[in-house]
Image (tube, rainbow over all chains, first blue to last red; front, side, top):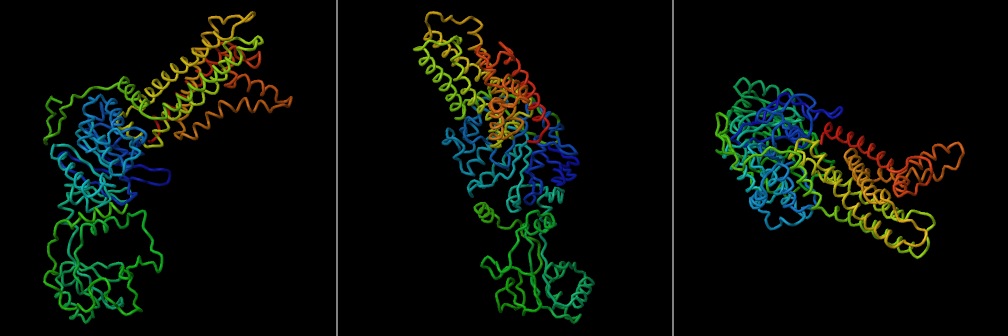
Length: 366
Length: 274
């Protein structure tokens, strides 16, 4: 069990982690999610006693890490970057770590086999690929056969087969009754691996709930409704929809996000109010979207899009400009303005989106 | 672990591998594995041996054909030791700073949260290796000097001369390396720490050479007296000035400085984030 209470870390004027409290329980995989720079690695370093918190405490089995007797036998960790001396062979790297905590030498070959590095065990880790480096890090984490495991971005640089392997490994470790704490910035990955989620943004806790609950709460269906660019009409429709029992939220591009009403009802209400609709489309928020929405205000490093730089995709969502004739570029192929298909009715969210290919692609992109 | 786990509401995992309590012995074994499994150790120590022994033997063979003028016989080992101390300094820095540059330090300190233990183990393992090898090299050179430079009117070296030229020089080189390790731990940067150490070893004497002004005479004298090359020369019985530390004193001075630096390293390594 990992327990953080009021964990805060500041570097000069920058607050990396602020008042973070959570518990990570044994027997399940707990995902630790947040955009880049959200404070995940800082938190993990504080859990491991590498960084001292500015205030607050974090304990493992009731004690701060640095006070644990023979810590590597109780806690294993994979750190974010390749924290390995590249000039040393994989076997020697693991051997010096084993000797440090009195782990028998035979265990080194055991974990090498477990992560599939036997054949390159004698090679210097400098020549390892990102994926092999991750496997070596995982081997080091498993060396002490610990009760608590922390993995910082374990699937970074792994191929699809490797990702699959890590996923199963973590599930198996948790099933053995261990505490497994995995950080990631990929919601899709966590949706497949984790049982519980702790989401942080800008160093603050955004969500701490089971994956099931997160899905139920966040991946709701909604309708996107666009009125002519006229604040009066939009307000009129908003009021009418709210009266009809819908949840209405303005979208950044001027459209309305309507929940709780079926599309024909929305159309009827608009007709009854005398407001014309320029768009009425069904949407399904994926987990990824829910996560993006949750962390939207908390993203530190946002990519800017220079004007006229559309990555060759003219259909990129752009702020709606009233001067230009409305073209439903990204919503539907031209000419398909018929009644919404039956499947478009708001309905319970399907479980996780197909994340396998996504995860693999994102990994390759890096 | 075969003992049942404490009463917990869940089925906790218990490892079948027996858990030992760990101490400095484990850290020493680990550091020994670390230092012998990287190439920089072989390179720096190899270069040290080549410099000390190679230059020592070369000088001995050159001198043996002439009659040395009143210089103690073993003193001709000085040149090799002065140069040979530089790779030892490099290794001393690398022992700790390479962990910082590669990120290995985070793995090490996760595996052993007692930072003092890690630093102590590194210092002990490195200092022992440096001391044994440099003493051995000095012994070979001293033996060659004593054997090759003979003749009428040349006194054979005394016991204390032997001791200072072998164990003394070896200790001095090992201490320089240890000082470098402490500086490396404080600066956490290989190039920075090596440069700083080269400055410490070479600059005082270089500066003194150009202090021709009368008003700087005292500074100049002190710089020469306490410079590292002069300290090594003093161990070999050929100090540049007749004033200043004599005999074994330079060694004790360096030991004091190294102890202070190690205390500083211990303080910062415990205090800083990794």
